[in-house]
Amino acid sequence: MVIIQPIAPMGIYGVINNAAGGHVVTTILIALVAMFFTAISYGKMARVYPSAGSAYTYVGQEIHTGLGYLTGWAMVMDYILNPLICTIICSKLTQNILPGIPYWALAIFYAGFFSLLNLGGVKTSARINEVLAAGMTVVVIIFFAFVIRFVLGYHQRGPAFFTEPFYNPATFNLSAIGRGTSLAVLTYIGFDGISTFSEEVENPRRNIMLATVLVCVVAGVLSAAEVYAAQLVWGSKPFAVDKVESAFPIVAQQIGGFFLFHLLNFTVLIANIGSGIASQLAAARLLYGMGRNDAIPKSFFGKIEEKRRIPANNVMIIGAVALVGAFLITYERGAEMLNFGAFIAFMGVNAAAFVHYYLRSTEKKIGNLLMPLIGFVVCGVIWWSLSPPAKIAGTIWLALGVAYGVWKTSGFRKEMSFEVPPEE
Image (cartoon, rainbow, N blue to C red; front, side):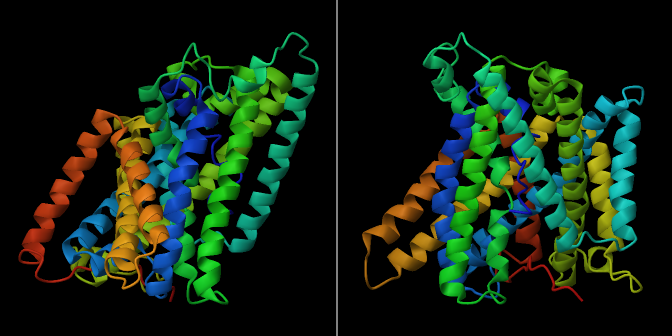
């Protein structure tokens, strides 16, 4: 929950609202269905591979090494884009505090700031993250209190007032709901990291699945409650295109004025700064793992700075991608491209669970057929609902990966590793 963050939907709220015609809570709950069944598949596969614990391992071992490589390649895009969208949203939110500073200057600042901290070996400790998560939870409670006061003072409401966030006939459209859901999944990104703790957990065969499913459910319910409260205040109105990153603070301003606007704005900003720093280092370490295993050029990506034990080349590359990308794409497009890679991993895990627990099992249990099948189909439908530009960009990335993989492995006759090396 610390990784996902208690305020997960606040940054993406405006983008989902505009895409789904105001049905943000509906998209969050539909995404929860996909994540629930996928979480079960992750938990089951963690039993089979307790030390590896990642989508590309599951797919590569259970289905085909080439498909495992493709899953890993898609996840690389996922990792690299996270610092990019954090750079964009941090720059936009800072403009709410310091409107005189141009966007380009803030983008340069944040891309450089994330890189410099990681080059210096600065790591956000679990304790600091826990304190930040506790602080975010307090902010959520304050926001709920203001919403309750608003609702109690709003005397002209009818029964439809409370159901409209789920279904508004004036703006409901299945295609828009699908597009919004493809963005809403960003709320859950990070839950799959639980599978990497298989070696540290007591009774991992039981607790990894339990923890993964519980985190998805808790994150989904909390996120749905937050956006439901916001929709009670804002309704289904779209946000201005240049204000979508600040949508949740704008909603807060309607009920709490200057104080609540800046409280929410600052909270979302701090959360994304932490996420940007951590995700950049995670992406750098993934590239280092690939370079160390010669999946990508070892002389550049497999190098580590001896004094601070940081893959400095990779940190700088990802910082450069974040900086350039912040001027080329929007926050919405970056989020969709990130989800393109994430959903390929999710579909792969569901497929691997189906193959291992149903096709290869001597005992054909109906649950082992239906649960990964439902997870795969729902994830596939949501993935297909991504915008055409995001799917085109993602397909180009996959095509580059296939071409490189075929050349590097002589037609996938050799394995390529995406393993993240352990902390040294």
